[in-house]
Image 1 (tube, rainbow, N blue to C red):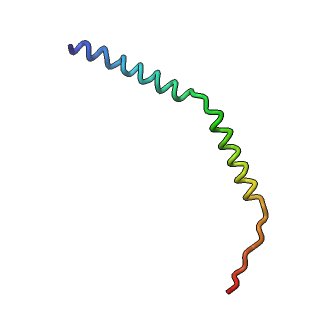
Image 2 (image 1 turned 90 degrees about the vertical axis):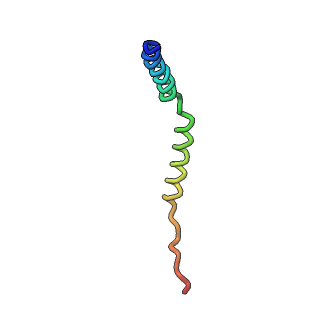
Image 3 (image 1 turned 180 degrees about the horizontal axis):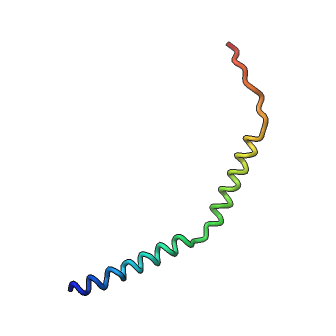
Length: 57
């Protein structure tokens, strides 16, 4: 029974590595495009000149 446990440990490690590898190499281009569009909107908003506010007190 001990030998079976020692054989299952590398098997589980290989399965875990395969799952992790497939997760890391997934296609994430849609998330990147949305993030870049949001960053472009942020830059445009920061580039606009806003009138300085004055205190009326």
